[in-house]
Each structure stands twice: as C-alpha cells, then as structure tokens.
Amino acid sequence: MKPPLQWSAGEAQLGGVGVEQIAATCGTPLYLYDQSTFLAQLRRLRQALPEAIEIYYSVKANPNPKIISIFVERGCGCEIASGGEYVLARRAGAAPEKIVFAGPGKGREELEHVIAHGIGEIHLESFDEMALAEEFAENLGERVSVALRINPSTASGGGLLMGGQPTAFGFEEESLPEVLAGLARCPHLRLRGVHLYTGTQILDAQALLAHWRHALTIARQTAELRQEPVRTIDLGGGLGIPYFAHEKELDLEALSSGAQALVRDAHSDRWLEHSRFVVEPGRFLAGPAGLYVARARSVKSCRGTTFVVLDGGMNHNLAASGNLGQVVRRDYPIVNLSRREGAESTVVVVGPLCTPIDTLGRKVRMSSPRTGDLIAVLQSGAYGMTASPLEFLGHPTPAEVLVGAGQYEVIRAQQTGFGASRTVREQNESSLLSTEVKL
Ligand SMILES: Cc1ncc(COP(=O)(O)O)c(C=O)c1O
Image (cartoon, rainbow, N blue to C red):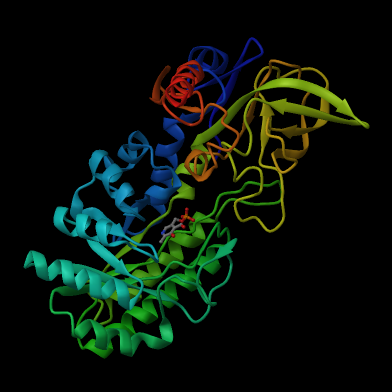
C-alpha cells in the first residue's frame, strides 16, 4: 500500500494537492500524510480480522492528535506508552476505557494520573509496577483493571525482538504462577487479561499467527491457574509493511484465516469463551500514509559519486537513515517529486548534518535531481518525526501536513530555531539579552 501520488504537468500531487504548493506555503522539510491511506490501511485490517479482535492504535507510531483521532473516530482504541501519550490520546477523543497502557518502566506520576483519570487496562510489567498500581488504586478506593504483559519463552520473525530472550519487557512466562500469587495479594487490582508483544516489522503472517497462538496458550494457563476466565487477550502489534525492494506485503488473507481459527478455538474453551482480543498495530496503520519531503540544497559529485544534500535528514527521519534499530541498513523508497520524466541517475541522498550517518539513501535510482527539487522518503508515517533527534544540530523541525480530498491542513507547524517554538531571530535576540544581563 503506497500513498496515491499523482502527476500533473510533471509535478507531483498528493490527495489532489500539488506538493510544491504545500512545500512553498509550509516550508521544508515537512511530513505529508495522506488521509485516504490511513483509512485504507485500517479498512484492510478491519476486513481481515474477525469481529472479536478489536484494533487499538499504537500511539507511539505517530502521536499527532489529528492522526490519533482518525483512528479513534473509526472505533479504534489506543495503546499508549506514557502519561504524555495518555494526554494525547484523550485529547484526540479516546475514551479512557478504550486505552491500554504498556511500557517497562511506568513512573509514579503517570500511573497515578491514568488511574485517577480512568484507563481500560494497565499492562503490568514488573512487581514494582504491581505494587505502585495497587497503592494508587487503594488510595482512590477503587479497583483498577490490569493485564499481565508476558515475555514468552520463544519468539521469532520480527525485526526488533522484545520477547523470547532476556529483555526488560513483561514478566517471564515461566514465572506466571508467582506473578499470579503476587497479584492475589493486591485486592485493588482486577486482572482482566494477558498481553504479548514480542517484535515489530513482522511480514510473515505465519510467524504472527504462531505468536498469537502462544498468547492463547498463556491465556489458558492463566485462566486455569486462577480458575477464572480471562477477558482480554492482547496479541500485540508488530504487523509489518514493506520498506525495501525484496520485501512483500503481509499476507492479510493468510492472517485472516488463521485469526478466525484462533478465535473459534478460544471461544470453544470454557475459560475463554467470552474473551475479547486486541491487536495494537502502529506501523501498519500509520507507516504507508506518510512521506518525508525535503528540498535538495545541493547536488554535488565527489570521487565519482553524486550526493544530493537535503535540508533535513536523520534529525527528522532517523528510521529512514537506518539508525533506529535496523541490523542491515537499506534504503527506504525515495522519489524525486519535482521531475518524473528524463534521465535517471543513481545518487546518495544525505541530510545537512555534519556526520556521515546522516544518510537517507545509499543507492537511490531517481529522475536526475537538481538543486531545489523536492525529494520524498516514502513509508515514513510511523516512527518518523517523534522518533528522531529533532534538536540535533538545531535545524528547524518539520511541519506535519494532512492531505485529503483536494485540501490540506497543517497539523503541526514548523518550528524554527533549536527545536523551540521561537524563530532563530528571536532566539538570537534573547541570547543577546542574557549576555547583556551577565555583563
Ligand atoms: C507494547 C507495544 N505495542 C504495540 C507496539 C506497536 O508496534 P508496531 O508499530 O510494530 O505495530 C509497540 C512498539 O514498540 C509496543 O511496544
């Protein structure tokens, strides 16, 4: 699934709007998001999954409230990883009971905040968190719903593994009896379910299904140990999207038939017959809709290699530079939005930072770029701007713009100066002022 770029008189358009027009108005670099692609990804997943599986959007993938609201308005819950994401999800309209909170190091303040303001489930990952949640629930005089995040004994198939090996995430599967015994000593916590999330960027439907089956087994064990039904089985996220030439789309048909069998199996079990399932994808829902667009400041040759130097790079799109966890660095799809026809060349696409790791594309084939061209990195809607070191070297932050039905909306304005909301000129003025005060 790719955003529907169209071409008119040699110029790229997204959602019926000329990209050059948006860039001229909003400044570059910028993130462009295509509303119809967000909706298409959600529709594809909704159609593939049985009704018993609810979709929760993983806010960390792209926490812009406008984007969260696209999913919330269409019935999704939210998976959050901090008190800050809780505030964003609520601002985007998420009902507290449709929010789940995971993360290996939840702090006192954020736990207290979500418990006081309402939360669907807190996914406990340690005995320390269990004790804190119990303390706050007791102070409030209420029972708080929790689930256990389990680090399974085996996991495979993902880019970045978070389970099946020593990690900080969740309780070890082998310790389930002790964890349940601990929970039994917390009268203000109500156990609703289990949660497994072991890895991201999984493109193999069978690997995902094997992981989901494992979640079912753990849910059964939990129910049997407690002699009580399990209400929620959270299967995690991790659904992948193709970034590189050799990668294929996740087979949603295979996922669909496996998921139906899984739900049938669960619902024929006396402990799980009323259980609901949750998937919490981020990348799959948000990734394909986003383009990171930057302008070529310079096209230069060095020892036979052509470099295209953009006005933004890894400071805005760390993932595309290969510095957000990839083992092998490969190029995201990159296109020249300013010229479609004409000779092609192979170039290296870099950002403006003084480090060779600020490289977005190592061997990119595109219509021969010239200074001033707009260059887009596709598949950039997830783990883009907020997963990047925006203040590194003090360049302006990118604007975020949502495009749909022939219109566009700035959903976050560009910030110039050292990642702050002030302009460079204002910053200079204030530093002059402070120098004067010092003198
Ligand atoms: C607990 C949890 N759920 C969901 C996600 C979303 O993962 P993805 O974007 O791979 O679907 C993550 C990502 O780190 C996560 O940690």
